[in-house]
Image 1: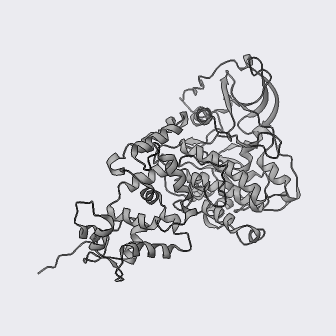
Image 2: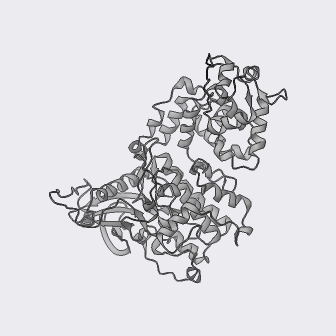
Image 3: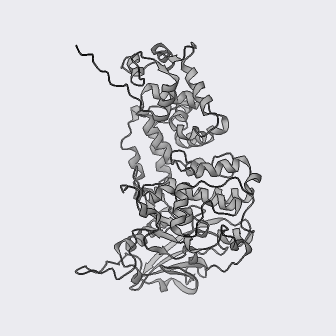
Length: 539
C-alpha cells in the first residue's frame, strides 16, 4: 500500500475497535494486584484494546443496492467429524475460543484450542479478508517453536473455526503481574529472545504482526521454563518488497509513531518489542495518558523515562537495547534479527534467522559508486568485534556455498532455504528483481560488512566523530585535510571508467576535485552529495 500524510485525526484513535481483548481468546483477566492500582502499572485497561481505523465491522454491511458479502472460505465443512468442542476458555469482541478434543485417529483425545468466529460479525469485505489472511499467515508460519501450532480451519453456515495448539500456561501479562509488575534482567532477556525470534521469523517471511503485546503471548504450560507462544495474528499482514502499510492498527500503548503517521513496515513491530521490554524491566509503560488520544500524543511527542527507579539499577547494555528498539527514527532502529545479536541479548542458544534487510542493503550497496563503497569500507573497518556480531551471523547464513564470499546466487539460495508459504504470499523473492549479479559481485566479509553497515545507527554511538575521522584518515594520509584524486586511486584502484577527479567532484562543493572532512561526513550520512551547478560568466 502507499502511505498517506499524517493527520491530526491519527492521534484521536478514531475507528472501530476490532478486538475487545485479543488475549481473552485464552482466558479473561481476573488479576487485581496492588501494582494495578498505580496509574502507570501494567493492567488490562481499555486503552490496550486493538484498533484498526478502517474497520467497518459494525452495522449490517449492506447499503442500498449492495450485494450480500461472499462468506464462503473454502475450508472443510464438518468440524464435528474430527473435534469435540468443549468449554469456552475466552471471549473477545470478534469471537470466542473453546477448548476442544480430537475425536479419532492417532491423536485421539488430544486437547486443542478452537477459535470460533461468527460469520454474522463479518459485516465488511475487510473483516472477511482479515479472517482469510489470518489463516494464511498461521498456515504459512507453522513450524516455528514460539508460534502457536495451526492444525486446521473449518466452516459451516454460521461460523469459521480455527483449530490451534492449546496453551495452558497463562499469559505473559499474568506472569508480569504475579511477579509484582516486573521481571529481572535475566528473565526479561529470556522472554525477549523468544519474542524477537518470532518477530524475526515473521519479517523474513514478509509478515508484519502489528499487534505485539504481552497479552498476545501465552506460555505453553505452567512450568517456569515453558516456552512462549505467539497466539494472535488477526491483525497481521503480508508486506510486499519495498511496500508500506497505511492503516492504523495495533494497541495504544504499543503502537509505533510511524503507524500513527500512516506510513510503516516491519520496524513498527520492533518498536512494540521495545515497549514490551521496557515494561518487563521496570513495570511501567513508557507512554501513558488517561485517554487513547493522549497516549497517541505521548507516543508521538514524548521520550521514555530512563531516569526514575528502577532504571539506575538496570545495566547500561539493557538501557541501550531498549533505546535502540524504541528510536523514533526508523533508520536507527535495530531490525529484529539484528536485535538478537545485541550484546545484552546475545546467547549461544539463540540462532537469528536470515535478515531480509541485509538483502535490501546489498542491493543498495551494489548501486553505489566506488567512492561511496570505499567510504563505507573504511567506516566498517572501525567497528569493534561486538559490533560485527550481526554481520558475522548474516555472512555465515548468506555464504550458501561456504567459499568465503557472498554472491547474488548465494543470496537467492539462502532466502530460498528459508522460504515458506508465507514468503511466497508476500513475494519475498521479488527483492532480487532489480539486482544484477555483476553489480553485486563477490562480497568477501570486508565488503559484506560495508554493504550492511547502517550509518544512521552508528551515529548514535558516542564515538561517531572519531569513527568518521579514522575513516577519513584512511584516505587522507598527507595531513592536508583533503582527499585528492591521487589518494582515491591508491585506495580504491579506480575501477570506474569515469576520471577519478570527476568522481570526487560529484561529491564536493568546490571545483578543486578535493573532498574535505565535512563533505566526507555528509557523504556517509546521505550518500547523495552532488556538485553544485556551475554558473558561466557572462560578458
